[in-house]
Every structure is written in structure tokens, then in C-alpha cells.
Length: 134
Image (cartoon, rainbow, N blue to C red):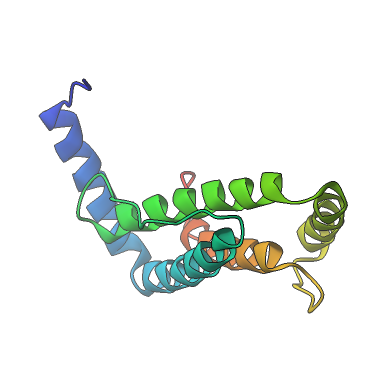
């Protein structure tokens, strides 16, 4: 059983609300990018016999929702990666490295890499204000 500290939860919530007000529209854009990436990965993971369920954020803030969706999408991406055949993983590795170096998504990239590109864009909207936790 996990012990939940109510005071810490409230402090986290207040900090999340502060970030929400600082980020404004950028947070909305980040959430939109992360939601699309999550949906893409949720469909892709079905190919391997898994089902995705939307994560439940720690609190009701949009900022917390962004992080919950982002981390869940990253976990789905990892699950997809490790479910691929060795040759598909090698191709994904090359494509991901190319994307990380160029920041330009290519048509031939896998669905997983395209979703990661959207996650990167969402994260950039949040990081653009100096937020170290994006």
C-alpha cells in the first residue's frame, strides 16, 4: 500500500497550476501533440496483441495530464520496439538516429518513429519556457 502525503500532493498541484499559467497556449499545443502520438501508438500496439488504456494523472491539472500521457506513450513506444523483429528494430534505430540528428520526420519512418516525432514536438512546446521537467 502506498502512503500518499496530502500536503505534497497539494504542493505538486500548485506547482502544476503555476506551469499551466506560464505555458498558456503552448501547453494546449503540447497536449494536442501528445494525444495524437498516444492515439497512434495505441493503435500500433494492437498489432502485437496489447490494448492501451488512457493513463490516470496524479491530479486534475492539464500539466499533469500532459506528463501522464507523455510517459504512457513512451512506455507504449518501448513495448512496440521490443515486440519488433530484429531487422525492424535495426531499421527503427537508424530512423530514430536520423530523426534525432535532423529533427525532420521522413515519410518512410515507422509509425512508432512518427509518433515519437510528435512527442518531441509536444515536449518542445513545454520546454521552450525553461521547464526542466518536460
